[in-house]
Image 1: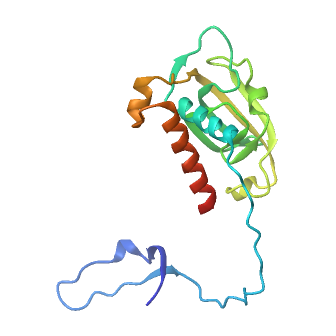
Image 2 (image 1 turned 45 degrees about the horizontal axis):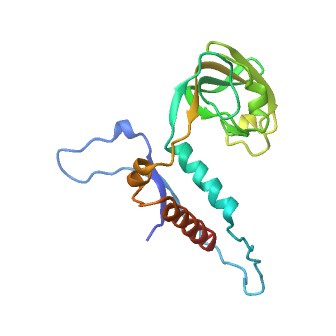
Image 3 (image 1 turned 90 degrees about the vertical axis):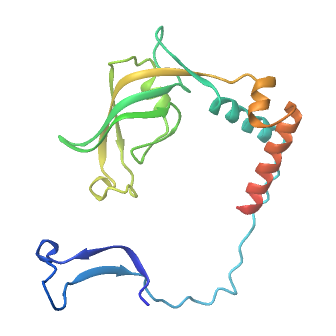
Length: 203
């Protein structure tokens, strides 16, 4: 009746041998789901946020869809701009020690997180950079970073730019609508609105 979490860890796994006869004995450890008693929750009230889906939300969803279905075109005549899609080797350093790295990371240049580090001014930091440029952002990794060594520490996030592409939004035409299974644009807008309403209700 153990509620096991994760995989078992065997003790001296390399010494476990199946005998010619008789029983095989071995030892392993597992993490198990803890037992605890919930407090009385009947007095807790939860406020349901009131979110009305309007035309602006629907148009934003349509823009996101056009972007998802769009085409990535090489950028050769300028540096990085907000909204570009960049491939880069990313290294996170604590002093002289490289703690994290990921090669060929692909990401959209917008405020967000890189290697679990929140970088709100990422577009400004990478603006103008071109292929083979190296940009370094000095920033605090945050108190809740998944890598314990980095929590609350000032780190250097280094980007070696390898590729820059811009997104050409998909055109809303008969072919685009047919691929998505709609006869006209209004059907698509209605479906996007319905999906967003359902998502809000589920949340």
